[in-house]
Image (cartoon, rainbow, N blue to C red; front, side):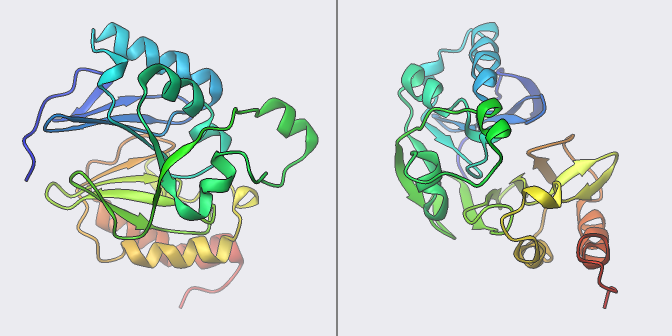
Length: 234
């Protein structure tokens, strides 16, 4: 297991993990000498990330890699700015690379496109299922986007879930169905989490879940077909 360092960037969650809260949570994850930024938030969220590092008196250049859970603007909008100012390479799943680097455009209304602008960011490393990034294992959980991933640290049973699973008022749920590229696939992807040993779930939206993660996941798996697809649970 990698040596641990207590993070002082953002709100402390656990040893080596800090959270910069907002509509989207950005996480600073430290393992040994490696510092990773997980998601960047909207384009305007880049400044709160910079301020969090400044408040902690930690150089932004300490970031070793920028890890994106998926290509949606609210999670990668600040990637280009933070890459330029930290020189940390960007990584995301291979199926989302073209959306992040600007070669593909996600379908959305013109109004949303004008509001949710983001500069393309070059992707240095395309991630695949079961890849390792330091102590983290990449889990491909497609459906919210084709390349949605979660990052799992098995040694301490921590899951950075992105938008594969989010928290709302003490329950686990999925993001708004209308923003999913394939809602049925997103629900099927939940099965990969069924038997995963998770003690700390860090979602892209909502609050960290520190207790009863397994029971909350089982509850979501039970009700998801009826809640999102109008199907009677098995």
